[in-house]
Image 1: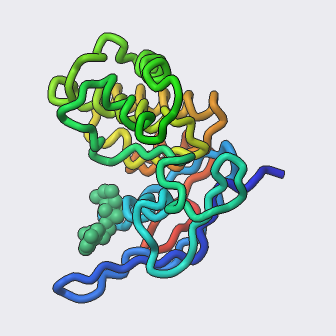
Image 2: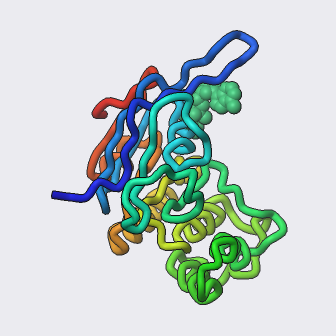
Length: 221
Ligand SMILES: Nc1ncnc2c1ncn2[C@@H]1O[C@H](COP(=O)(O)OP(=O)(O)OP(=O)(O)O)[C@@H](O)[C@H]1O
Ligand SMILES: [Mg+2]
């Protein structure tokens, strides 16, 4: 039997707005096994980014619990181990504009004191096909190239799980295919688990399990 890597139990999240409380996540239950890939689709505004932030420990739920097994320490709450074991590919990249490609990817490793940061960063940048863009700043890169830098950065600390928030959003069909091939290829090779948020049914079907987020709950999709 596969080992459970991530477990979300009855997560709830609301935002208070001028118009009252907005109940975005009503009851989220999700279990992801080691090395498993899962996709989540849902309408814009359905709460996909909010959910990934809770799963990665970037935000706290109002109720419920997220547990992640980071490097076989047993199941722990992800906010206690922010950056360790979880690789996040943000919807809008979140690259540092004043850092070049190499520096952006190395930064994540330096923050955690990961050894051999530069060698690892160069290897990953090469593997995402940007070996000739090491010294480019984000403003000098195309959208697809920024996305690939963001993927390299998410992988540099050898996460056990990668949370990717619409990594093909705003990309043309061919570049989107390339990004998905790259991401699925790397996580499979390194036996990482993946939660892929996407609007594309085609990309979703390339993961092992497809889920749909509707009205604050997940269902098979
Ligand atoms: N900090 C916040 N305060 C108030 N409302 C918020 C906040 N963050 C998100 N929301 C609202 O919660 C809902 C879910 O937002 P979220 O970004 O999770 O959606 P999404 O499914 O990722 O959408 P998209 O596909 O457009 O990226 C939206 O209606 C949004 O307006
Ligand atoms: Mg989103």
